[in-house]
Length: 316
Image (spheres, rainbow, N blue to C red):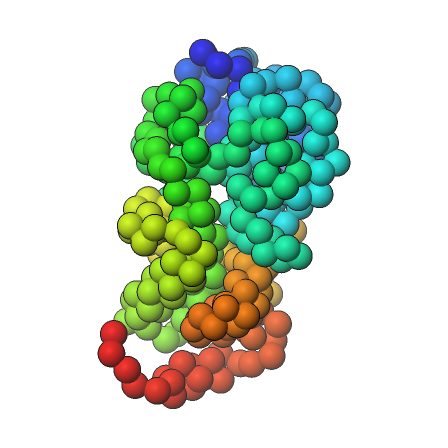
């Protein structure tokens, strides 16, 4: 089986490495500070309780990780461009599979375009869908979408005993589904945290899904992609579970609390990026706009409710 590298020692990167290694693949897991994982054979900070299989090599040497023909990029989306630009010579020809979800705040680019810009000779791919790191690490069944120009070889190389991969060629749709659902998850968390009820959450999920489709179509995505695992599937999971960082962050906002320190909340930057892009393109994104205002403390939850409920009546 193919040698696979995972760039990023966070929870998701570690979980993917564990799942791949259980099938006896040779896996190189790169982390900025690998010492603790090397010694304990466990990611005690980000994914405690799961021992790293013997077929995982933990390293802090980026060149060692870049020797693999398939590389999973599991680092925060907002750092991806700088990381690939810095190490472009090392990743010139590999298949680069981005597991990050979001839209770059500085450029408005999604993962595939970031990869093409920094590493034009590499093969870009996007892995997305409803998944929590702890479930993957525990060997629980998970289904994801893998998008690339020619996804079938990667589909076979990266499927595992507990991860079923469906292939797609619509990279724009797959990456936007994963990015935009985080924005809606923050809004749903706010609704539940503020005591607005399950009906309000259902309304936000439904209208949020319509908003996701409007934006994705404007970017050239196939609407059917958003109905799949990387869109509707991920939306359903992320908006209904406190395991979701974005939902939990919104939950804290709705309760008038601060979110957990040191946790990457991709939906915050994504909301800002897509709100700006939508305004320039004339696309109506009321929920994204509200999330931006809430995360920047420009309005209160009561203000947000009033703004959404006072919008002009229209057909669904």
